[in-house]
Length: 362
Image: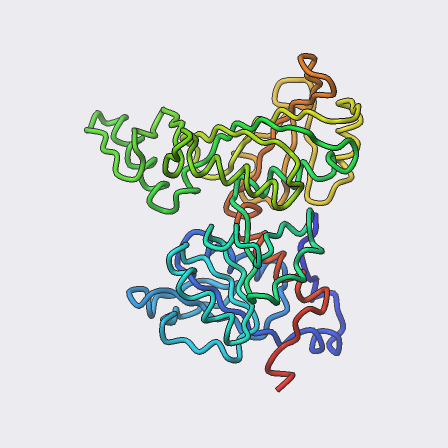
């Protein structure tokens, strides 16, 4: 698995040559922001300055970055004129307000919210799937990160689409509470404890009790009866992979802390066997096939937490349609679904020499 820039293996001259980027993380105190800081450190990202940003109420809070501690600064007072990349994880409303302003100062924004995903002038990028689309970032200086459930889905679908051309997919998601932020994780913990000690179970973040339950409702309902989360999977898969693919989705919240799972039924134009699909996915970037027909021969969210890969299991042929396959896809939603993908986009910008350190250029 690609772990980014192995700076420790490089000579001093080369290390100095590729360093020099100044990176800001907006929303650094949230689940995804903290994960971005962890991943930047893990992957030896070529930055000589990392700035943690959040709202005024978090100003002065300390967050970890590798073996360092960063003091959080106020986003509203920060000058982006010498910053190269802003990894934005502060929510859609804040991104809508600030991302255009940041981009106008010459800093490239990589946004984790849904604010810019459907804008025709903003590329929606999963580096293993559509890296060439990144060149369009110059229109707005904004790049969108896809929804967590979409990211892992398209990583698994892309190599199969290249091999046999996908016509239609039916997706059922089993999404962890961390997708709803720290409040979602706290609510699962609090409700589980309340059940065990026979206290009243209160629901604040979710529409129904999540402890020992599943909720077929993520995000708001739309006029056609689908939820916005389900619509995101449809719209983003089409934008990233192929607008001709037909997509339908049911999104379900489950009592799991970290890791989204998906049951996916795929109908192809051309013939493809389960064995062929396994071989293709074993060679595909970002994918790890764990698919043994035995007890425990598959991946669950517990095993994927803290890992970079998109895991694929239970690959089998669907005899009810021509050229059909079923599979089970699991990934850490805080990593590949958000933080890791955002960092990989930043690495893509640097690796393709699409940006240079502004301080060195000055």
